[in-house]
Length: 254
Image 1 (cartoon, helix red, strand yellow):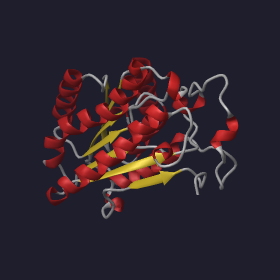
Image 2 (image 1 turned 135 degrees about the vertical axis):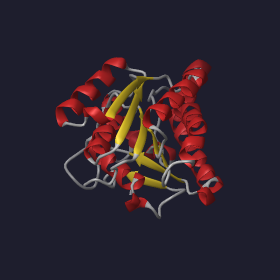
Image 3 (image 1 turned 60 degrees about the horizontal axis):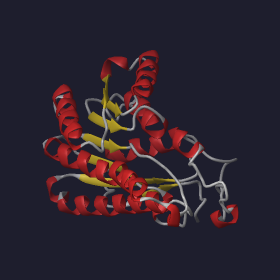
Image 4 (image 1 turned 90 degrees about the horizontal axis):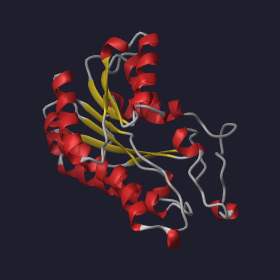
């Protein structure tokens, strides 16, 4: 498949997990990618695999803290310049931390909001002029099943992801007549670096989590599952999808 032949794509959170898997999927389909992450070692691993797969000549990596406004402004400008424009923005960067809500400090709460929600906003704001000048522009944001279903000990994370869904709806409406599509993926029951150890309290009550396993398959899926959906949404195959969330959880939350 070459759905991304000639498409210019910026992906955050590209040093691990779903973001990294999305880089490889887009490269495999012919896209040109700037892969950004705060983790330089993770980006090196992404680049090494891309080179091994034959797509290294269409990949540039960039260390970027999406919660830093000045860094985002500089990083997005550099990505747009290097790509010669921008057609797709995938906001996969995020952090997951858990705690009892009554023990959650303001610094803890603000950190999650600043990376997940504010960081997504900053990336969108800085990328919008280039996207609106691009070809069939798309923004793919990352929500979570925690935004719509109860995930105990994750109030800050859930709030950030709910905010991302609302942000996505707003920009999808605001820029629809200018040709922009904005969609969310809402992963759940996906095995990636962020979900392997969410840092649950030692006295966490497992009974509060209800049904934990997907209805289909034999357990959690890998990040490639989500990357495939992102590729569909960001391509012309998703041309009639905007302003909504796509839940990818194998039926865990039916």
